[in-house]
Length: 495
Image 1 (tube, rainbow, N blue to C red):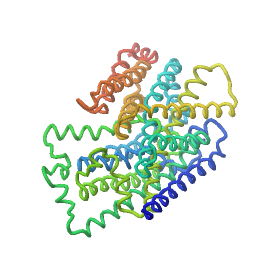
Image 2 (image 1 turned 135 degrees about the horizontal axis):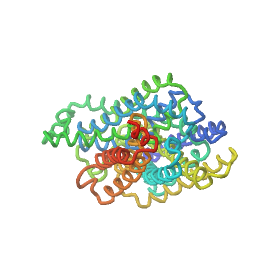
Image 3 (image 1 turned 180 degrees about the vertical axis):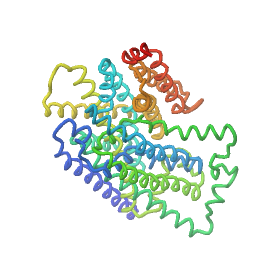
Image 4 (image 1 turned 90 degrees about the vertical axis):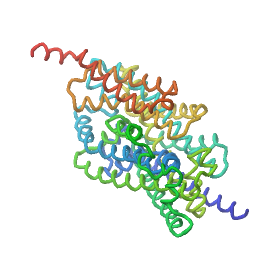
């Protein structure tokens, strides 16, 4: 019993030191935030490697550490398609979209995604800002809440601390340093957290893999291939249409990388030069391969060793913390569990800043108070207050969140992708997008996602990710063709 207490104290010490380090980093870099542009895109002065690490850490978040090992334990090798959809999509976005983001941000001077879209359609700017603020508010609130809940789960499972208290603790720390430094704080703490996540998803799987390989009673291939052998199949034992369906569901994460996730592509808006893109691509690809491979391997090894363990059957997202505490020393466990907290805090911070920009910059300053000029100090104060409000609302949502972290993230991801991916993609690569098309993407993407999830069709029929984006994308094209912009109408008359 004495060792157990000492072990838990060591884990707690490691976690506390990590949280203190994060807050210190956050407040240290917050000293350089002087303007609203600094608060939302870092003044375009941040190094590309830090931005790329921040983008990856923000994207993968708690679902990679908490959700992915649980899915790999439950589904086996077929869960790899989720990682191909996410990691492949990230590299695709860096290669294809980042050039456009740099050019367009430079041309328009936009500092938020909604600001950029509004400036492309000045005659509809106010409506676009309102619709954008509503979309970001709705989908980010649930997204942020799921991150806080993911961190709370880890503390609860590790120390038996009340889940609600644990969640509030995580939320308080994230809101605190997000409030202080905004985007600059997010990027530097993200970079630190991204490195910790790599350490976590390399060290732990290697430790466990060595133990499995040295145990003659365990066989990876035999364990995964037992029974129907579904876990050893890349398509979960499915063939034909069912296999294609599985592939489509898992690869559907890719849609979000077509300019659909504001908290991700705002990193590209923060780049100052296209020469920086190469180092970003290399960093993102390396990080993605290492962390995704580690998360998948960890879940597979959990099944090889423990099979259908009751604790996993009841909640698959307990795989990661259980494996950490079972196979590492207390001090190492503390560091590795800090990796989950890192993922949670990373994404939540970025989303808080993104959501506050929609409320403070796009809605309050540009719409509600559009005839008033604010000093930079006042703009910063408004931005920080918005961050605080969004954070508190996300905490309130936790009372109603009963789903898996992975599931809630999936909903938020689908909603944002259905709204922003059609607009950004068509603005970049199709010169016929009209304000009617923009309205269609915002409204139809928003309501399709809410309708599908609200009626439970996400589980009964097909994932919302395969429904909301295609409908929204086609609607944006259709409405643009039916109701072209004034400039487009003039061109049509002369042809």
